Image 1 (cartoon, helix red, strand yellow):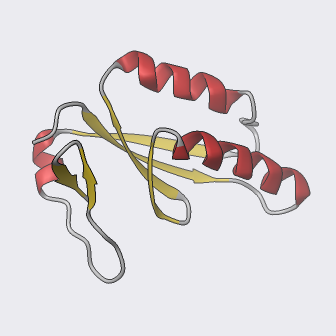
Image 2: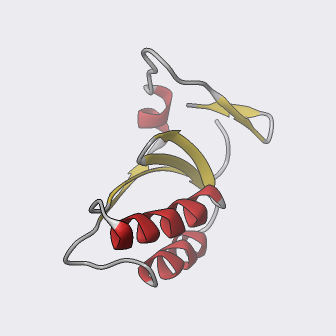
Image 3: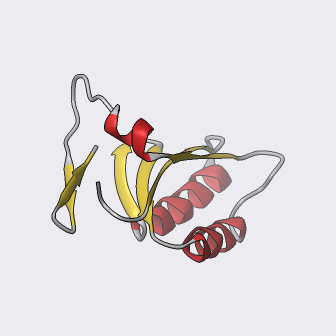
Length: 100
């Protein structure tokens, strides 16, 4: 198993000009940390809690608590081993290890 903790990040923003702008900013931030696996879902492998804190600090600049939704699910090694992909999807290779 690869070092670092795997996180599943899900988000939802309202449609419309302002929601679309915030969503685009958050997507760009998340792409700097991991892989987009579905339209509003990312998988990130972070090696330190400070990475998560730094990412959240950047996201909070664009986030409106009353309108937007962001969920962060930390996955332990057991959960990571049990990941399944059905239908479209791919396994990403990072640092000589594979994860879904």
